[in-house]
Image (cartoon, rainbow, N blue to C red; front, side):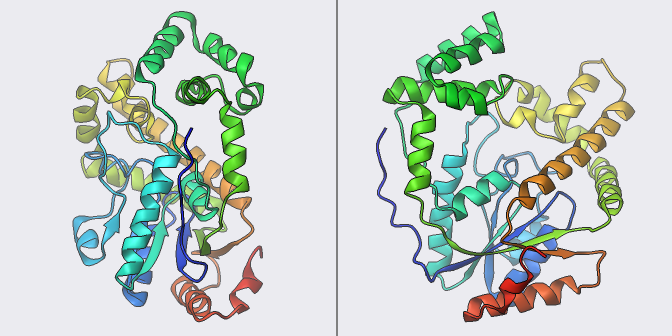
Length: 331
C-alpha cells in the first residue's frame, strides 16, 4: 500500500451537492443552479459513468450537457472496473478544473457513498493490483460458492467480513486482494483513511417528496417513459455485448430486470413491473442513506417551499459566508 500526497481543496473552496432519491428532480435543479451561479455539474451516479448505458440510467439529454458542462458521465466501458476510490480521485481533479475556471462545482446524483466519501475527504490510497490472484478468487467462488470465498476473508479479516455481505463477491475479492498485496486488512487502511481525512466545504441540498406515494408514482411514470424512449432495445444490445457477465455494470437497475425476458424466462410486462418495484426499493434505500446526514437541507417538491428560490437563497448565503442557511439543517 502506498500513501498518496493529497493536498485536497483549500478550506475556502466551496462545492454544492444536490442529492436525493431517484426521480426526485435532482438534475433539473442542478442545471438551474449552474445557470444562475455559473457552475458545472459533476455527476454522482455510479451507473452514468458507463458508456452506452443512457436511457436506463436517466442520463441528461444532449442539449442539457451542451448548455452546462457535465463531468463524470460516459467515462468507462461496461467491462471496466470502477471503485469509490476511483471516483474520489477523479472527482478531485474535476473540482480543481472547475475552480480553475472560476466556476462553481455542483455535484448531482443519488450515489451517497460516492459523494459522501468525496466530501469527507477520504483518501483510500493505492495498492498493488493482482489480476492473477483476482482471477484465482473468482474461479474459487464459482467452484466452491460465495460463502466459501467469504469465509476466506473472515479467516484473515473478521472485521471487514462482518461488514461485507457474502453475496457481494466483488467486495470480498477486493478485500482479499488488498490483504494479499499489503499484508494488512482493508479495514486497517479504511480506518487510516478516515483518520487522515480533510472534509470539504460543502453545502448539501436534498430534493424529495414529503408524500412518498407521489415519489413512487413519479418513478413508475419514468419507467414507462424510458420504455417509450427505447430502454428495451438499449438493454438488449448491452445484454448481447455481455453486460450480464460484468462485475458492476451488469447489476444496474434498469438492465438486469430484462435478463429473464431476453432468456425467454419471463414476459416483458413482468420485467417492467419488476423494474418499477426495484426502482422504488432503491429510492427507499437512498432516502435511508441520506437520512443519516444531518447536514442536508431538505426541500420538498410537494411542500410549501418554492424549491428553486429556497435553494438559490441557501446557496447565496453559503457562498457569501453567511451562516443563516444552517438553521434549516436537520429540520
